[in-house]
Image 1 (tube, one colour):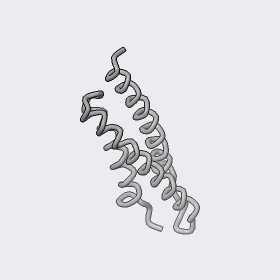
Image 2: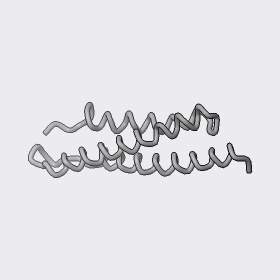
Image 3: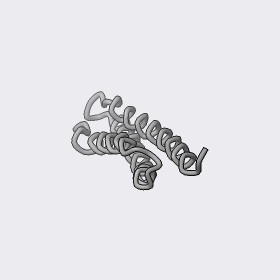
Length: 99
């Protein structure tokens, strides 16, 4: 195995784990729905998991950019990071339930 291939595999593993964690947190944020305007606990959970999803997606983005720029991975590896980042940001802003 060449050195660049080993770096690509390492980056792919890091990206897969980061995207899985970010995607799971974002999915929990979307699946949490408050029962009404009095349900502040559900709103706090949406904020928490939305921020976790956004944070993990933003942490994996530099790894994806580095791996693509160095040609260790193909450009489509940046798509999951971008999609999860936009989904988490959307849940925290546009699709946040009205209290």
